[in-house]
Image (tube, rainbow, N blue to C red; front, top):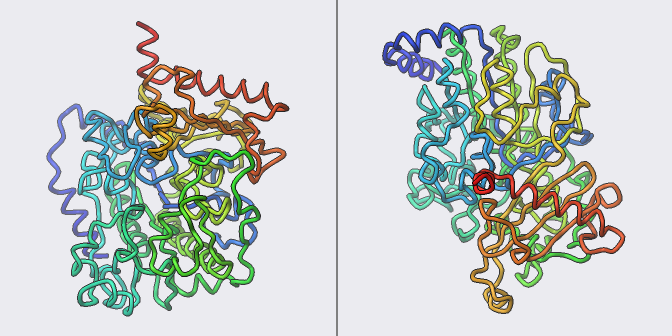
Length: 550
């Protein structure tokens, strides 16, 4: 930790003297609250504070008792790169132009302003560690404009017991390391593994290890433990600097592979793992709405337990493997919860808790076998519903079912910090809901996901290409999804000819999404009303708005 503190102090010393204008900003910012920004990869709302009675998450639940738990929060696109770009910029995917895990946000949107970048302009010091942006969607410095202190990255020396860097970023088993790397010393010795994307479905299983790992190791044998330790050291250094700060700490788990120290696996009994009740596709299904579970199937131990065929997109995992994966997911959630505890305890010990806004969010949900899907990559409830907890000085704790979205996080933090909200943001501040948990600020939340249809179907339907975009709105009772063809995005005018298919689910009567009622006669008026809302939403997006004004 001394090394980290020295690096931090040195970086502060090397900062140029501020101009008079900047000094004025710094003076005004001196009384502003700090921000601890906790990002958790693939965390669905399996948390005690969200009503799950099996999971062990005492630290996140402790945070929930300090702030507002947003029970009906949704991501903009259920995959890492796009959803994180939306969180960090307060803009939707059709504006960021990040719909995949390849596009670099600033290559297509060089003038976009990120949350920490804006806070720098308001006198904040910004720093980060772990997974905040998806690494393939930003530069090698995890988006250099976002950080006034260079982004921290763990080195081999930060890992426990001289274990060194985990193989493929995840594994500490000597047997797995020997199998995956040239000489068992970690990813640096295997150049093919250095840039493996966590979500890449195109990779063969030869570049993956098993889907789980359970070893009796300390927390900092894995990356999230080292990130928590670095985050702790940064909190100490930032507090001593006596300037408002924004510290982002990103945790990788419970992202696949489900690896965690044995003590977290020991919190659960495998026979108690709750397998999904409904492991089928919906009646009246829209085939493109489902996905292949390709991310999971890339792991080396999965193929022997699956009956997957591309014709029906069902993973067909054997029950024993389902139970193992569920056990691993729960263990990984508890492991991450312990790392959140490290950060909360540090703030508490520093006396900084009373002047710190704390925001904890999962980038999207995750299918744990429902619809026979293992992964994200859909517009369904289990992929789009994401945890969000916000605690701020002077605000009472509570829970709300008011609809919220990831694009709301940026304006909320800025508003709570007493700063002006940039007018360009597409989200809304959640401060009114924090003041009154029954307040409603929006009628629906919006998610989207791209798909490709088969060449034969493209030809049959006479489309120019096979690229679809599914726009999904979630109201308090329903989800309505409109699949639009020929590379449609919301920057274009809507026409009925662009409609490929529609879905609608009634969560009051059908919480498991068993029946698509978009074209069911009894729902005709509701379906039409929701379709009209989707079309109206599309017409109000920035480019369409400008076109309409002309």
